[in-house]
Structures are given as C-alpha cells and as structure tokens.
Image (cartoon, rainbow, N blue to C red):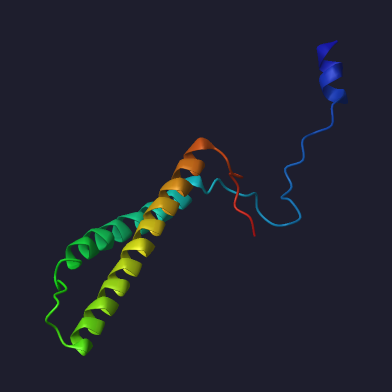
Length: 108
C-alpha cells in the first residue's frame, strides 16, 4: 500500500529556478567583508587620537598659525569621527549577520 502512495506523489523537480542557479548563503563572505573594514578603521582611529596632541594651541601664535592649527584639529576630529562610525557600523552589521536578521541568500 505504501508503494502505491509513493508512486502517486509527483517527482521533485530538480530544474534550476528561472533566475539562474540556486542562491548560496553569503553570510560568511559578508562577515569577512565587514571585519576587513573594521580593523583598518580602528587602527586609523587610534592613530588620530595621538595626533590631537601633536600641535598644541598657545596664545602667542600668529593668526595664520592659530588658524592652521584649528583647521588641523577640525580635520583630525572629522577623521576620528569617520573612523568611529566605520567601526560601529561594521560591528553592528556583523552582529546582525550573526543574529540571523537578514536574508541568507545573495540577491541580484
């Protein structure tokens, strides 16, 4: 009786989907990408912290030197903030990938 029930079942289709080959799990590749972005950003961020103290401001400077040092501090601060954003966003992306809050298949 079981053989006749199995024979009545339609055979599974092994054809590829219309869009091409079946999609693969890309989670590992995505984690590797974000990890490779996080490490250099953390190194650059650490280096910029030390640069804050390389040109201290003093009251006896010319206007041009004072302006140049203030611009330098603005650029260093911007660099540090961008590095921190890169580290935090890549860490968040890795956490979400490991938590399974994403589609595991590659999309085109």
